[in-house]
Length: 166
Image: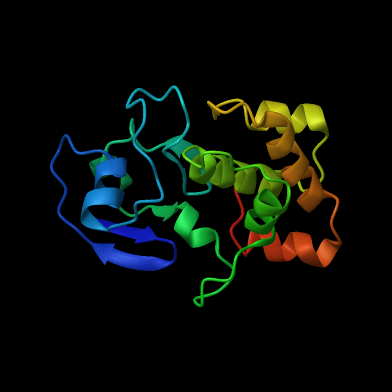
């Protein structure tokens, strides 16, 4: 199969029953995407598949042939690993307590801001409802997303990094 991950094209073989999560973590060593519930209930494995957020633990790898995937590793602003404004806001607002849900939260927030650059707090809550945080840092997660949404227009266009959710 052919899969574009974070802008890089990969030719891979995938077992018929392997998940996108297994492919990302085990074959491509992209371990930011987390395996937690393995049932699509927590959102820690959230990635963008052709611009839409999906739970990679429930997505068969074989169904992704020809697709484009964005993981948390792909959110950085440049090849030198500089953090995106969203990642910086999560740090500044202390939105990552234990950090385990953070990759999925970041990918979901990125998709939310790509489709709605200025969401209300209710829209943020709705957009992030598929991602659970065991530490309960929801107010800080909302504050981080709000900080990016309220930033100057140049910061927003840098935040979306050219990746637009449909």
